[in-house]
Amino acid sequence: MFETIIKGGRVLDPATGHDGIADIAVNRGKIVAIDKNLSAKQGKKIVDAKGHLVLPGLIDTHGHIFEHVSGEFGLNPDAVGVYSGVTSVCDQGGPSPLTVGGFKKFIAEPARTDVRCFLSSYLAGGLYGHKYVDLYGPVGIDVGAIEQSYAENPDLICGLKIHAEPGGYSRWGMKSLKKAKKASKATGLPLYIHLGTLWPEKNGKAVDVKKLVKEIVPLLGEGDILAHPFTRHDGGFVSRGKVHPVLLEAVNRGIKLDVGRGSHFSYENAVAVMEAGIIPDTLGADLHGYNARAESAYNVNGQFRPEEEPAEVDDSVPFSPTFSLVHCMAEMMAIGIPLAQVVAMVTSNASAMMGKSDSMGSLQPGRTADISILKMTSGRYTFADGAGVNFRGTRRFTPVTTMRKGRLYEPVSDLLPAWIRQAA
Ligand SMILES: [Zn+2]
Image 1 (cartoon, rainbow, N blue to C red):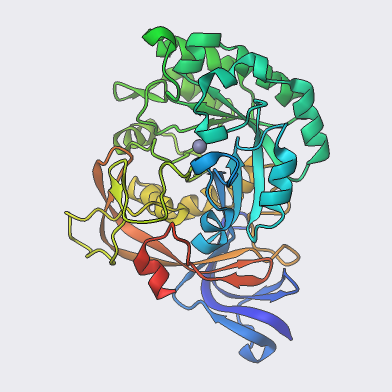
Image 2: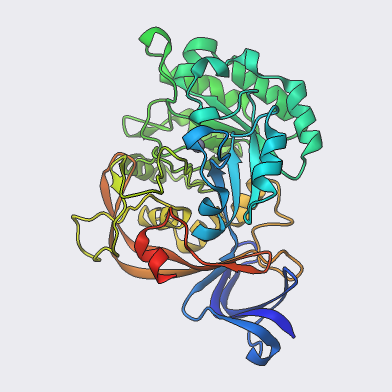
């Protein structure tokens, strides 16, 4: 007898290569069997997944969930996580060596979602979305403190977050990145590097972005991650429609890319990156309190939240609520990434980036029962990028039910559009 059987769905797991109709049996929070035809009589509870995708629990590699500590910037972990169809969320640079203890006790432990983080390299952490630039110079990085934090929290901390962008470069050159790399070497943790303008340049003097990019790449090693390859901001991957050759070379050297969708996402630059033959490894929605407001019909960065399910071909209504990870998955398909690869971006590739391939991102007997069930629909959908530029896609995903450690959660997050929440 099994506690739960997820029955009749299309089980798609890039880690094992499985793609086909199957049933999954779950007992005591673990997957115990994956089989073509488990009898419904064997299950106390049956989840009908017919016609749906059954995926390894989705992993958002870039979230901001240090709620109450990082100001309005920090969202509720379960709103980004289990109530939005996502079983694991990795906070990017919220907690620091000074605050990781609080992050563990007040965010990670009470959350129903599996919470991990890339520790901020800066002692200040990601307070108010890194609003106060002077807190983020090399003086504010303590390699020993980072080593100690990791020694105390080896499961929670999966890597280190740092920035390499024009504002910081105009003040301190590569000093912060070099210090963070020292910490990365000492701990064996990968670096996650934010690309694209974040802070204003010192005295308003523009820096040479090409020079900046040229100086970043040699400092990086295999497994380090460059974020925001589709950014619409300066100092990113694409300038004048062309991918920087140094960055192409970096990708060939084994440096990973995380989309970090956020408000950075530019459709035009995404197409340019794809045309250069580069597909990012992981997705990362980069949701935070400044780009995803839960309360009402905000219009943020050209996006808004329709209160009703939009008509399929109504071009005047871009399907872009305050976005979510599954929304970003549909956008990835719209720019030409095939389904199995999009799923890998939020499952197997995500767990690899976090050094957790042996425990996360795959559906196998003995693994924790973290499973995302999604409805995939076909139609003609209009999306809007971070600048409000519309583009077309033909697939859309809606979370149906999410299993985390064997427990089921409905898609009722305030970050999802009302028509999804009301159907739940
Ligand atoms: Zn971010």
